[in-house]
Amino acid sequence: MGFEFWGFLGFWVLVIGHSPLIIPPVHFQKITLIGVGLLGGSIGLAAKQRGVAARVCGLVRREESIAECLAAGVVDEATLDVANAVADAGLIILCTPVGQMSELAAAIKPHLAADTIVTDVGSVKASVVTAVEPVLPRFVGSHPLCGSEKAGVIHARGDLLEGAVCAVTPTEVSDAAMVETLSNFWTALGSRVVNLSAANHDAIVARTSHLPHVLASALVNAVLAAPRAGESDFFGTGFRDTTRLASGSPEMWRDITRDNSDAIIAALEGLQSEIDRLKTALSEKDAAALEEFFTEGQIARDSWLADGENK
Amino acid sequence: MGFEFWGFLGFWVLVIGHSPLIIPPVHFQKITLIGVGLLGGSIGLAAKQRGVAARVCGLVRREESIAECLAAGVVDEATLDVANAVADAGLIILCTPVGQMSELAAAIKPHLAADTIVTDVGSVKASVVTAVEPVLPRFVGSHPLCGSEKAGVIHARGDLLEGAVCAVTPTEVSDAAMVETLSNFWTALGSRVVNLSAANHDAIVARTSHLPHVLASALVNAVLAAPRAGESDFFGTGFRDTTRLASGSPEMWRDITRDNSDAIIAALEGLQSEIDRLKTALSEKDAAALEEFFTEGQIARDSWLADGENK
Image 1 (tube, helix red, strand yellow):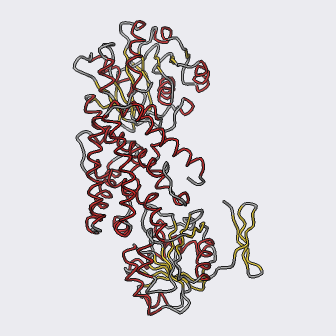
Image 2 (tube, rainbow over the protein chains, first blue to last red; image 1 turned 135 degrees about the horizontal axis):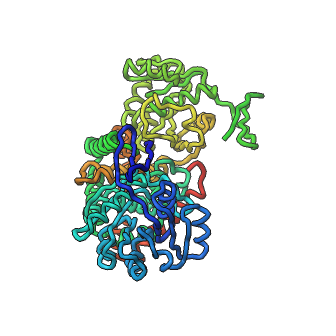
Image 3 (cartoon, helix red, strand yellow; image 1 turned 180 degrees about the vertical axis):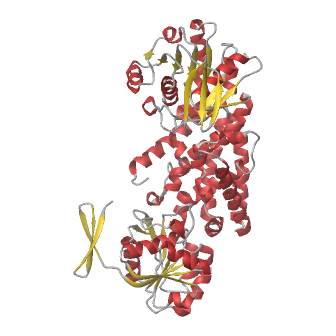
């Protein structure tokens, strides 16, 4: 997808293919990333490359991370000091595992300017919004769907958000202008914003993202972590691809699955029905039922691939 | 991997890297493929390219397949006639779904020369060997692990077997010289032969291959085939990769899973323990147990990737 930004008359024109789309300007004097890993770093890079921020600041926990962030070129400055990081920021983005966000909200609150917008990039939204919004009224949850099993700022890419869906989950008390500014920010970074409630987001990603992830880990634990003699010769690309997600960060997935446990349990029940259906067909050696099971999957997946883009 | 074959003194020298390995010559005047899809076609191409056969013949079921096989360059001749296909073949390879092999064995039997070797490429071995060996004493089961979800002779590649493991599953009554010739054939096509019993093969691939496959289909059936409103924006590369195998041939997987149902049920029970372990941790919101679940998977998978080649 080719696109360009031109600034004129105080507006930007976003040209995607042949369809110019006038979007309001979005520009911050300072954006602060709290936590600078793959996603935070990629947001910093994209914000700098696209001129969305005059300055990008990163708050990190370890002294050595400062040099890493600067070397990766994803921030203009990095610091261990919360007050410095937060001061004068127009937008603050929490990019840590979701379990840390409640504590972070309390830590940054004393240093926030009155009009600072705060958001996050967590993969689960209801728990984060419920914990952070009462502390920080100008908080709106976000979730750019562009993760990778590669962790760390070293893998940050300025185009990671390009074409990705970004969920924004306002509540009834969210300021509308603030939600619009935040949406424009994510749009300016190349992502496609979808507004929905935190609860609906969590129920959806439990099925589309968390379920594949936990299954990949369960499969690895059942096979690789409990190996059978002579088995090592018999793994192929199928096993590798099916289990790719199991290489993701355990700390991140611990927090996501704990915070979204109810929706994931519901998603697992849907899967269990399919496993039970398969077991019945297997134990009865029912060729017609087995063929139906695989045909349903093949048709559903191939239709999905045919419908979508960038899959 | 670079390699070359030189014929001299009646032997071939296989040079892999700097390690010359003398292997016995293997050459057939005629090889016949029964069924010419992705795998059969790739075997035909490889056999022609590597000079392992003077002539490759394909037996197909539909008139239009003759032109397709010839256009793909995977055979020297293609026919609908069993007697013609089988006559004078030194090696016959059954490349159909495993459910058809028993019937095929009976069909080719009247036309076989006394010394013809017969093998197959089915993904499950005990059912095939049990059905075919009593009919064709010079049958030995094979399974080159190089499938793809792309079906059809149009996707055939001469290097598909290169570096792939090829299981060969002789029984107590298999002629040793015949097994050696067959093993040399698969080696000459670039694969790495592993000898093991059909039962052991089936128990292993139930875990390493069939389990990931049925899980991919179950996941697609539970999610894509029963969609939730607004869900279509929220699929990413994780879902795509985890479900890739679900696009495989339903007919092929119906036969494989029916024939290997006991071992797959056993593999599903191992998986069920992991799912139950996860459900308990989720319902108790037990962060330590969740982290352990994901850490075990990450460590096991990353060690496996680090150990292996071509993964």
